[in-house]
Image (tube, rainbow, N blue to C red; front, side, top):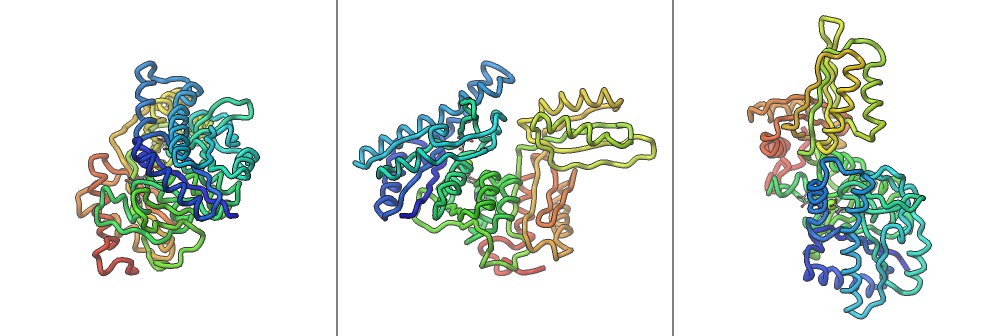
Length: 413
Ligand code: ADP
Ligand code: ASP
Ligand code: MG
């Protein structure tokens, strides 16, 4: 019997009616003869509400306690979904992340899965039950509760699918697949039939919320086919897998944007070996991810270093960089959270020299100023003013002919 993993996001289980609809869909899969493992997120905006609640108590709550709080969201949804499936007369059991064998490191609020112990899940499946596992949470080897970062239920689902050697991991969400841009920002965006792990990883890392980047990484590592689809329709969604069969010639596959970005600058820092190492190792020690980095060369013996971090990390990053700046004798530290990032992604970019220029042209024509640029073989990212980012997504999407109705869609440069 094949195992399938089905993951339902927050909006798919936002209220009792939707939970009942999910229960029906799960039972249908079971009736088709598969063993079914279900991963659920917290109801609707529960996680945001819990974060807001914590902020009313403390500006910077201890991360361990944050995890203790946030993990409660998913515990509510697994229990309610199990009750709904029970109502349909099927054997079912709900498990917390820890009970489901999700063992993580102790990096609270951003924990990484170290290992999935599938014993319990397999035992319950063998007993004929539908198994529901709480998304987003795990336990450390010392039984401390952890969470996997925002959107982490995707990673729970893919990791379980990998460990159980499932046939497929279905990610049910509120859009019917992965689009060439966020369909809420670009209504004419086109649904992709499939996308490679590499491109999906870039899209996700660059802000396309639809999958957590770590989920894509785990999927690629263990070759788990990930099917992103809507919990509100029956339509086939987007398959994330090794090789894209269609649309191979597309130079640019999609446009992503990220508003959860802030810029940090350390000004007039002495220009000598070891400075970048000192700054970025201090940030790495605190598990702060640094993204775009630019260093400017000046006439004097000093340099300016600019980089971007997630807005969630800004307060802590500022503290760390201020301390390091003092130690190194830098003149000043500046922070700016009125920025956002727009990116183009595509495996075909590497052999097409004009791609970045076309993006810059589109932004220039729209009078949007670029503050920082970074590129890799399959992406180009630009930091722009926060208020310009949605317009930036639209003009760049347009410039590459990615819209549905566009007869040139997919045309090579
Ligand atoms: P869930 O609660 O199901 O995990 P998320 O809100 O995390 O759902 O992710 C789904 C959302 O991702 C969609 O509502 C959509 O607005 C957003 N999104 C951003 N970029 C894309 C994209 N390229 N394709 C599809 N959806 C995207
Ligand atoms: N509930 C968590 C969040 O909102 C995890 C998830 O939805 O994947 O980030
Ligand atoms: Mg999500």
